Image 1: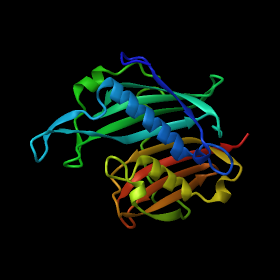
Image 2: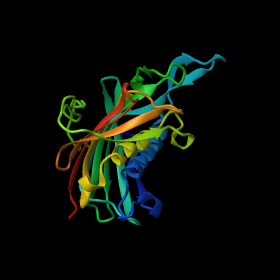
Image 3: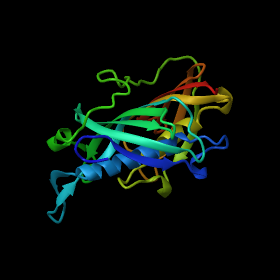
Image 4: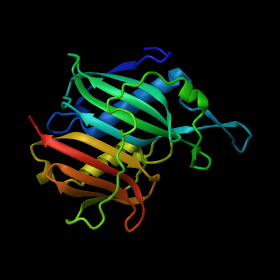
Amino acid sequence: MNDDGELWTETFRVGSGDCGPDGFLRLPRLLDFLQEIASENARVLGFDFPEIGERGPDGSPVRGAWVLSQLRLRIDRPMQWREELRIATVPWGVRAATACRDFMVTGADGTVRAAATTRWALMSPVTRRAVRVPAFVAERGGVPLSPFGEGDAFARLRWPDGASGVPEFTVHRAERAHIDLNGHVNNTVQAGWMLESVPESDISGMRLAEFEIAFRSETLLGDVVRSESLRLAPGRFMHRVRVPDGADHALASSVWTPMS
């Protein structure tokens, strides 16, 4: 809407390429929508690619790249092909060296379809490491939507080592089509990889109701990773993307509910 702390809103139409065979919006495409509106709002507010105090080889100022650090998403109602969605977003300050941003997704009738809370780190494209978020980013933040509340918005995601059961997995190679403007596999791709490793028999007749993800390290062009899903209980899973026999690149949890 404007750059004085009020909600920024945009309308998105769910296209056929955004949906699965059931006609409902896929998770990666919903995350794409959130990413796009966050980027546009940051541009309007003047901190889409802020200077971070570093200098490039030619002595010019280096601009930082925003990367998603954590996301918690609640989906109240599936979103369908040809549906128009109104997405609102607002940044609301800095916590633990990350910039916070909330989202609310509503349908044409005004009912809430989904809500998300996120944290974004600022990365140096030179060192590939996180850098301090500029003070003016916190100063330009608006009033939070608070779909989950502050303080307990994110869980401490940990892979349940020693848990019974064997994780299902798929193997992926990071290809050019997966690499984004920041030079690594986009967060939406990794989320999609995670859900691909969930057996269809475990979620038949169900829909995704909650999804939380935390990113640990970059996945770069040519990397081969293993996406694993472990069933904790009916409709509840842990997920991770990792280097085979190596470090986790991302961890996530999901909750599925019967399709009404």
